[in-house]
Structure formats: C-alpha cells, structure tokens
Image (cartoon, rainbow, N blue to C red; front, side, top):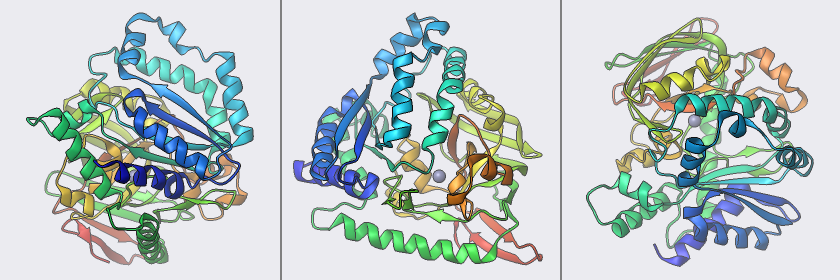
Length: 409
Ligand code: ZN
C-alpha cells in the first residue's frame, strides 16, 4: 500500500475515529507489529493538537510466554502504578485509539482456564475505572495488517502479497480511496445511519423475532427506553467521534434476561486468540443455557461463563447481506470487520448510551432499565441470506425489518 494512503488512514483514525481535539491526551493500544502505523497516528494526533500521545504496546509472543511461565497469582495482580494510571485516566479522559493487527489464532493452545481466571481477577480491580470512563471518552478501533493475520485471511499466496491485499481491503472498508475526502465520505455515511435509526426508533419495538433455515429461531425483547444507534456517537463532552472504523451496523442493547430460542453462528469467531467455529447458542429466560461448537468449544464455554452477565446479551445489530464489507466476500477472522458483514448479537456488557436521556443518568440507573453488565462484550455473527427479522410493537403490529437477509424497511 502506498505511503500516502496509509497516512490518509492514520489521519482518518485521528480526525474521524477518535476526533482528537487540541489539548487532549491520547492513549494508543497497539501490537508491536503495527509500529510504523502507530508512528503515523502519533504524528497525526500531534498535528491535531494532542497534548501527549502514550502508546501501550502488546505482543502475542510475549503474552504467550507470560501465560506459560507466570503464575496465576502473579498475572492476576494489577500493580499499584497501573491502578494509579487508570485513576488518572478517569481525570484526564484521554482519547483511546485501539489498533488491531493480531494473528486471529495466535494464542491458540494456551491455558484458557488461566486466561479466564486472570481476566476475572483483574477486572474486579479495573472495573470502577472503566465504568467511570464510559460515555466520557472518545475512542476508536481500527486495524492494520500484520503478516500472520494477512496470511490467515489470504492463505496460499506470498506473504507480501497477502499484506498488500489486506491493506487494500481495509482501505475499502473504511471508505478511503486515493481521490476522496474521507471526512466527506464519513459525513455522508453517518447521515445514512441517522436516517435509518430515526425510522427504527419510530416503532419502539417490544420484541424482535429472528428466523433462518440454518436453525436460528430466536426472540429478543427490547428495552422500552432504548434507541437504535449507528455510525458516530457523541461523548458527554459533546465531541462527535466514530468508535469503529469500519462500521456498517445499526444496533441497540436488548432487555437483559429476556430472550428465548437458538442463534446459529454463520461466521467463525476469533476470541482471545482462538477460533470458535460452527457454533450455536440456546437462550432461556435471557440466559445462554446450552451451546455447541465444532472447534473452539472450550473457548466458547470460557467466554459464556466469564461472569453472570456473559451469558446474557448486550447488543443486537442489524447489517444487511450485501453491505460493502459483505460484498468483498473476505472472511477477516476479526470481529471489527466480520461483524460489519453480517447481522450479529453480542454476549456481555450492553451500551448504556442507547438509553434515551442517558446523559443525566448513572450507570446504576441505566442498568436498572435492563442494560446488561459484564466484563466481556463479544459479538458473534448470525446473518444469513434467508434471515428474517420481524419487529412487534407494543400494540401488536408486525413490521418486517429484514427479509432474505436484507433491510425490508
Ligand atoms: Zn456490533
């Protein structure tokens, strides 16, 4: 990929994604594989007026060593300096830029039990800080190719070629071309989301019913006060940002504890470095009670049992078959992309900002209305070419929302 395009993407990450404002601190979370892109993002952030740019590096090989050699007790500790840093972040509210590039099954084979236990223990300490940042921070998730990820997506061709192809695919999904003005393209994209949400929000659906030949037969109840959202969001500070680049979804948070039936996954899911494939989950009284997977069953089990809220839903998202990302017909093995090619739902934490008037409510108040709470939020894909979704209003009206995998309204 030519340097100019990559710089354009870095600039879009800063200006459209996080929308960094003069004087704001920025924290970048990235894998060492993406160092060149991180440098560009940092430079663009400074050009946008960032007060500082701090990078938190990760490396799958190091993570693997840590889980192999460190004890559970040692891994579970959150050092006091780290906690102080998190506390400070709740005061300075930095913009958060996550840059993904990991190998989708790069942590395969490490002790899942240990990983889950570490995550649970650390979360007990970090939760108050992440709760305090919710809706206040501007954040964005983007991705850049790594060699291993590219090889996974495009097997059987030389590594350089695979990386090049993944770059081209990513640029396409994030609406960056050689000629265009990405800001203009995203304004138009966000305007389309706004119209779709407005339409859906008129109905105030009480429940959605999903059907597909593959075995999906599922009903989810909605929160009366929850709205459909899509595209950019506004932080409590009033600054507009785009949390995901790319994004093609319109979503809401469903009523915690009210869902029945079976959802069949239609794409593999890379969860914490392990691929989960050919799986289905059955819900009763809003909770996952039964699940099967052809591969990665253990990872699926650990995911659903992470905590109480991990067995319940936090998101319902609508993405038509034939969306620009779906049209690429590439399995990215990365949820940021694959979720935007397909209708999906998420297990775990819901989005409190889907509640109308959340700005003047506490997290306890939005949770009390039915927003799920959990340490995880994991999307999985259920879109299919024959998927039907019907919405039912409080007064019993039936509205066809999706027919044959596409928007019907
Ligand atoms: Zn989603």
